[in-house]
Image (cartoon, rainbow over all chains, first blue to last red; front, side):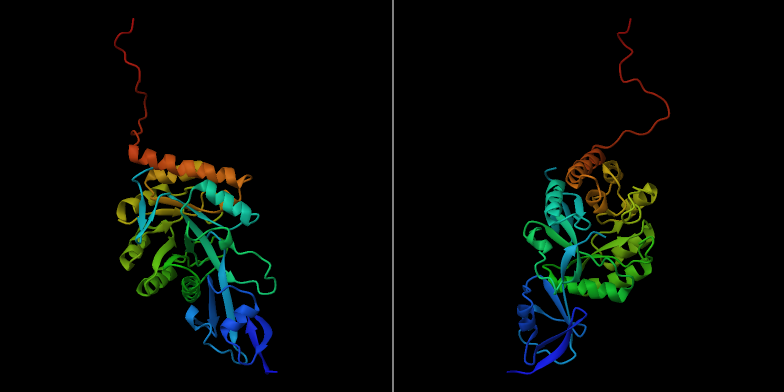
Length: 71
Length: 257
């Protein structure tokens, strides 16, 4: 069994597989990749990078999408 | 109205009513109100996905981005840095370079920080964004936003969500005369006559959220706003009569006994 690491997702501590990519994390969270934006340690990722960027211990991931809003 | 399209940054819109998607009871009501409004442009906010409760539905399951032009905003941003971050995230999440840029100055009034707005707009235009700036009813700032490269300006009618209507029609009129890009009156509309007045003044469009979502019957109010914007636009194009202090009879004197 692979090691697990601690990361932060949307401000909350959580664990993930040591070799997991951002794409793996999104799939684990059942989040569709279209229409979300992902920020990894304040860097906004291109959707194409999701399956390439491997998460490291202490990484801070922000996953955002559109919600209702006016002004 | 046929042949009366509004063009902003290469996007063409049939309806001159832009609507927000906040404050509705649920997505179903949001969807119905937007349909009733006839709007083409729908504003949305960018926020964290709820990762603990994935059962929650997505707004875009109800508001089809193929049918509507999604206009993300930077609402809630009180400095340039945050506004830039949200604008970039919106582009990464979305389908276009459109951004409704808000840099707010104060929580109580939600008035724009126009100094921050100009700075953020400059950077975003350079990055290829189509910046629709929410600004004060200040003609000088409006012109500066155009000089920077904004394809339209969106001056407020009154504070966001206040429902006070058009507080300074004269400034708005000056902006409409001075600035050679479309003017979208954004924020502060309370009821249909406010929207009609904005259009009669010569606004190219009106953007609202609370006036519809906060009404007792949002779907009926959405429809009212559709007609108000249409009526105001038609009246503006038709050209109103001048105001006179005294009466002018509309029935002829000739032929009277």
